[in-house]
Image 1 (cartoon, helix red, strand yellow):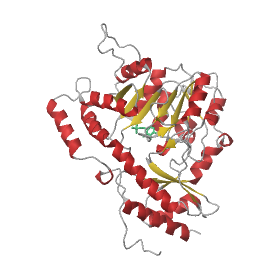
Image 2: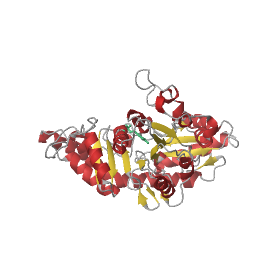
Image 3: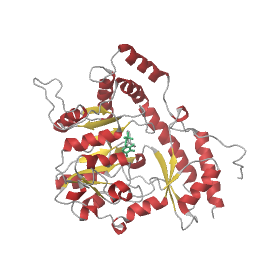
Length: 407
Ligand SMILES: *Cc1c(COP(=O)(O)O)cnc(C)c1O
């Protein structure tokens, strides 16, 4: 089929504005009620508290606490673990920076594990290769909404006696081995930033089944002030990471829509997979057996030996057809960013990196073959719950034509 893309360009919905979001009358009404109540702090209001209890129920965890961002959620999780300065936390080099800097703020050393290039996630094997006597926790990111193989990772963590923190910012309602992410490890972290499955503009949530960790997370979000205690005090070093009632109100309305948001994203992603799975040089998303993907983004792998120019060239051809994409996702593994490479932390101290074992800071490329292979080949397509069949068919047709032109 030949088709001119100049004549009938479709504008795809965007998660950066109302075209690709589910924000509407419900959220307006909830915010109006929050404002009319006159109580905008979540320490006194009811919206954020309801969001917390309903979110815990949704994830299947005992507790959930709201906070100000996904970054704050990860910081809260790390602070609850309470590492000693210089302790190591194993993590991934392909994630959002907000999953990494909290480790350093809490005085711990991020130790990067390699990823499986098929899904860009760490595995039990790559995590095991970075374990040391100083390992204090493992943080996994379920990248693009595609979960890690959790059963094996939890086994490694258990053998070593350390907790797993799940970064679920991109993976609301995803499952691994029949269990929902955020309820598999000791702590789950979520983001409600503009571009996530559901949003309050900025915002975050943490989940846990563990009573002690939950208590510490509640306190960390609240300047460690012992609300409700007989003799409250500020018990330890902590920040104000609270969510406001305005966000709580929006979040509560958004949560009602989450199941439909995920269903639509998955249905449309499956449609695209069906349309393009025969295309030479293109690999559709690989999902580990027993896991379900919730498609925060739709990530293709491009085989440069079959499609000259690989992912960047295919991205250019899609752009000519009105479709934005991100070759490589993040441009480089996180450890190549200046903050880690040059250890720019507190004054000129380089702390806590100054306390680290040399091996923990060894970012030699040969230790990360999967990560470089992954970034080299991926092409990330934006995705949201407003994608309908016509949008998906447009993308599929554009991909077919871009691929055939490319060879
Ligand atoms: C978005 C995101 C974060 C950070 O969340 P913010 O709300 O932007 O602070 C952390 N981890 C992952 C995997 C993310 O996608």
